[in-house]
Length: 361
Image 1 (spheres, rainbow, N blue to C red):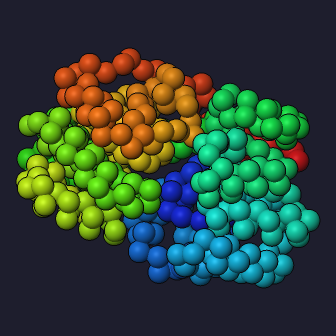
Image 2 (cartoon, helix red, strand yellow):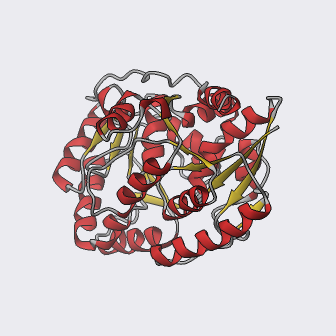
């Protein structure tokens, strides 16, 4: 029996590993344990997330939770080392590019275990970004690099990675969308705000770089709201992002133009974004989902981990530039958006490919 340890470091990771868990459950000769590096009472991990994804709660929680990334790395390394010594695995799978992901990767190799990186080969090419360092370390240590597309394969090739270690399995996030698409749930907020499908914008925000420059964020919010005109904006926000955005909107007297709502469950959020006129976000996952749903998307960043969403999808990058954001929102509102297609290997079979590879390594 091939034993797999799957490590998740944040809420979005569960969305990406869910198809893999379901595929393992359907396959003989392989089993898994799911480990979360955070706390069991993490408020972002609502029970509905796991029922919506049709996966069980984690088998173990490492309870590492702190703001300082170096301190977090040390705590995860210590806790995961203890865990893996008591729960041996043949392969450890880590996801994306968090500090906790890097910590688990380092411990895995120090224990002499095989390491697999899900969503490998992503780069911003900005070494000043902590996540870029994490990506380089994780990919450098990994025995199996599962990439989403040819652009990611090209990056690993340029960096000298042995191509026998690189597998283009496709975008596993799309496995989830295809699996769950028929179960989207229309949120009550549609009736509360008198929203109509295809006639509103969705705005999400989380990046620390955007939240830390309040003056520029205010300019971007002004550009977004001004160009949206009469098109309502719905903003599911939490924590610091919610506090800052609500304060800025009140100061600009735009409070009535943007409806800041509580975060939605996965199925409700999927319905909200898939039926929007357009999306403004700093989330790579949301941008990928928008491309799959053929919904115009503006990403508040200068790069994307999945350039396919820009090259053939609906995604437009505007960085942190209010003027570019203004033009992009105007294009959505006026219906002048570029045509889009579904990128290669966004076919919903990524998890099947991964399981097949795991059984043969």
